[in-house]
Length: 392
Image (cartoon, rainbow, N blue to C red; front, side):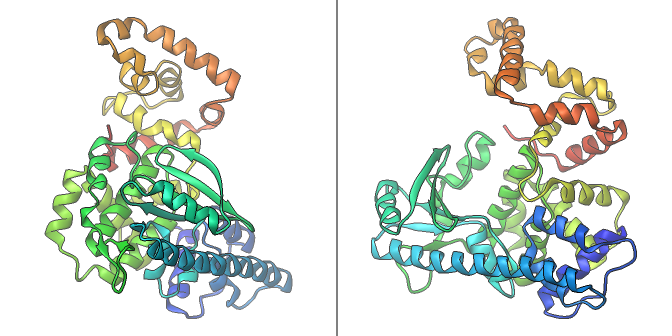
């Protein structure tokens, strides 16, 4: 891999292994590492390791100390709130399941090494109203109800997302149905109402959640560290046949295989073709939650034949005049009568264009269309085709 990727891997491994990392290589700056760290929410892991290296100026050390201390304080508050939240739900007899980073961070050598923006918790069954009462009693204020979760906030910046469902039904029907079956969770030892996944099912959900983000907006390199850490801890004991069967049923086989391989190439030095450097570079540029403009790639690649056009003009045509199969997802009235709907497609294009201008929707996609290098269009097409995310 290229110099930056190799040094990021050195910092990750040093942080996980609690050892001193090699000094900055020539051509890599502290400011570059800080930017990548901020975009991927890896301050404690990357910058904590960098702070221990030789050759830094006092100004650079002070910058890194500030970032690392801020990460430590915020993570410390989150850990306290998570513990209180689990205790509160247990006492109130509300079945719940901490999700995503709220569990993944405990598989790292230290929970401080794995940052998270908010605390995600699934509320089982019909307990959302009761959970809301408990959250408000803890000082949380409801900010917004969106899709499959409610967002609560508490000073100084602690956010809890209380989920009604584990997966967004609008992304993929198979995965939504799979994760709607909550029978795979088991009670945490010593508790009656707090549930967790066992290793296999946690890994399946982790990869499905990563794939969802990649499909919609792209996702960042911290996900690769999650894969590496989880497989180092549980890989030897998980049921490979079970994983293979479930990933196949969810349409995630190719995605999982490529991401596991990229994690090995990046963090274990396994050899790999140029495609994996391109995939790593794309993910590094996505940041932790991806970018709005990246939502175009999967649909565009589906619409183009394997040897179809790869230039900017083809991408622009697709963006301004998407096919019926794409438009019906956002304008369901087209599907009421499929034959008539296809005749009404130009009207939907017009409505979409007006909304885009008036509401500012698609601003970042339009900017990307103006700026993207033509060669990168082919690279992105290759990435999304190989990952085979055929969600519906």
